[in-house]
Length: 76
Image (cartoon, rainbow, N blue to C red; front, side, top):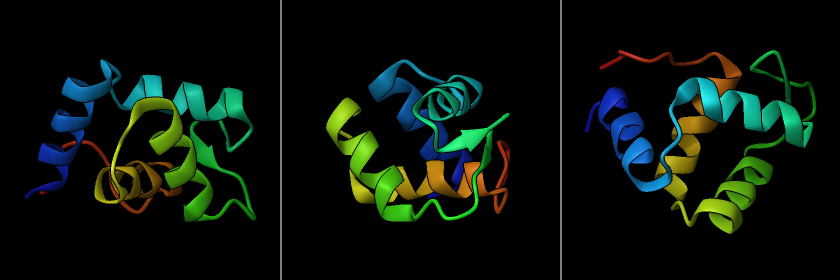
């Protein structure tokens, strides 16, 4: 599955696109301007997305990769 396919599935499951997820992460204090804050661990993002949206580990890690800057929308 491509990274973009993960993002598309996340949007289908949550109704939230990458920009909206980044804004929500900012609001939760995990990131600033959509960039992951130092010291925030992947497990924190996984737990938040599982509890709030019912996302599984793989899809949550895709959001973590997005916030950490390792991947961006459109990546394969």
